[in-house]
Image (cartoon, rainbow, N blue to C red; front, side):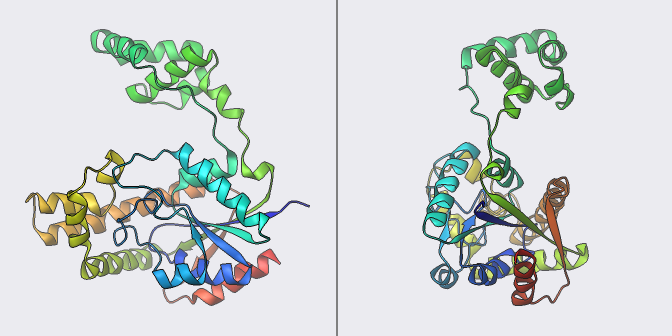
Length: 305
């Protein structure tokens, strides 16, 4: 019988943290954060990391593991998260993977292929061709060697076209074929995925309340401290921080920063819903505005029993 692995996914601000704490208690679990920004040290308020008391109550993994000056790839995340999952299971507990970063969830469950390293010289030659003759010529070439990959890439998406041609050149195989040669956690464990949903007006209200709370808790001061460091490209573009960084540079006032964070967070939540809806394995839980975390956790627990 396979060991069980539980996922709790959903958009930002919907209430995953509170429910996950209650659920982890019911299933004798430990939480694996599946959030692309909570990995960074010192980026606490803007990423809504669980409070210290909650982490003490239920062990959490994949939080505060790298400096914001370091780049962090999805492949690195997968390696570290899989190790944490195996350790939790070895200790007789249940891993509870919680987050809204759809790509991170997918590579854990379905795997990721080991892509060839970047060949800057090869890319430079292709880019020069694109500059001289247009991106279309490279897209036609990609259609010839990997029709399946080309069908999922816009003809003007030079970055992805270059990568697909680079992989074909170095691996001597189409990137679409390599992607099918992956082994994920679903091959080894019994995976159950629960998704949290909510009517949009109620979720957007929660998003606005969270942003207001972030500013009250000291988001601006936290962002100021981060500007004293050399941030990685990923960290510098983090939602909630990039808008405050622009405010600190004098590009607009504090109220405009708040407005932009609220708007951009709503847009991010829409993208998260779009991503997760594609996965038919997710068992959806509809929440009302005043849901009780304990009750939702109990409902999920019953489904697992």
